[in-house]
Amino acid sequence: MAKKKQIELTIEEKLQNALVPKEKQPYKIPSNWCWSYWKYCGKFIAGNGFKNIYQGFTQYDIPYYKVGSLKFCDEGNYLIDETNTINEEIRTKLKAVKIPVNSIIFAKIGEAIKLNRRCLNKIECCIDNNLMAFISEKYFYKYIFYWTKSLNFYELTNATTVPALRKTDLENIPIPLPPLNEQQRIVNRIESLFAKLDRAKELIENTLAQFEQNKMAILHKAFTGELTVKWRKENNIDLSSWQEKTIDELCTSLKYGTSKKSNPEGSVVVLRMGNLQNGEIDWSNLMYTDDKDDIEKYLLKKGDVLFNRTNSPELVGKTSIYRGEYPAIYAGYLIKLDYGKDIIGEYLNYMMNSTKAKHYCYTVKTDGVSQSNINAKKIGAFEIPVPTIEEQQEIVNILDNLLAKYNKIKNLEQQLEKIELLKKAILAKAFRGELGTNNPDEESAENLLKEILAEK
Image 1 (tube, rainbow, N blue to C red):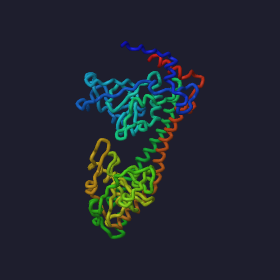
Image 2: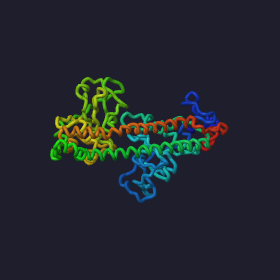
Image 3: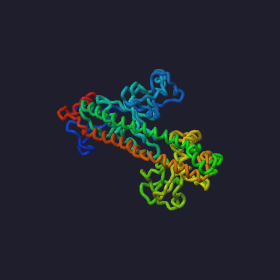
Image 4: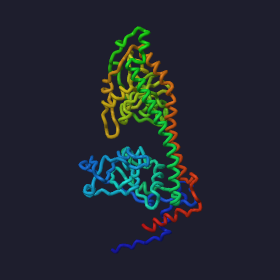
């Protein structure tokens, strides 16, 4: 049977297919803009399998990016990871597609999608099969790039176990398209505003780093006896009264938290690893439970010390003290250090946030694919200096007074959060035509869309 001849659409018919119907348009945009679908702005390219035998070479001229590469971008959002490179011969063997310069590269599967990382490439490259690239056609690539940063890719995933992005889901996302000159002006405006926010962010981060350095120096003095030299002299106590004891010796038990699922609503808070911040409990982003058995088994009492046993390599081991603000239990990624009569909870909490404790955690952690773990046995073997209860209390009093002036640290951290919120607000305004850059007299973006459709 002869194949039916495919009917050639007119450019106007193609345009109507490419435009988002008015009733499906997400929001109002300037009259010389138009709503289209992402697939009409360029093309998506999937990555290729990257065999282990070709990984780890840095002497070749073609970068081969993996999901981890997305962590390494310069200030212009360009990839700078040189961990893996290949040559043309290897590329041919792998049948790897070359990704053109200024493509948008992002994760398409796995936990990395949650981080919403995406970058541009400044030289031709290849990508592995956990990444995807988008190549802009005629549209200004940076406009598309910043538009993607206004999206939450994780919300587009449909898998319950392993998050994954499907090409078809991405292709049919509505995108607001301004004229080409307006795209450039929008990008210039975004980058100008972002540059100011980034300068403020850098100043805050430098202040936070200096605070952390000063805090660690004070804690070091506290746990070497330097802070309480005068107190010991006044109380006729010698430094020999200090003993080295393990956490196991100081605690009656090291108890893991609940493994049951928590809920957005409930009567009792379930503290998770994200709620342990700077030695205290952060009462934001809370989850709850009404499970009576869990509440009876894991209910915290004032002064309990919680240790984060599973987290990223940098954060695993962080510790906070519960001060009884709200009824709460704790999740399975945490361990409750049930300390006995030989140590004060506040002293233990300060100790577990010291440089010595952080170094110990870093050396004994077990690294997984994306997270590290420290089990109860390893934390139980940690040795700490233990003075008398009276001197512990004096150390806690001194530390409370010395570190009180740093309470504004929370305000600085909140400022960092506000900067990220401001960036999101700027992006939201940008793609609504609300940055004050649009020229209504410029020809409609539909003409640009027609040019692209005519070439397809």
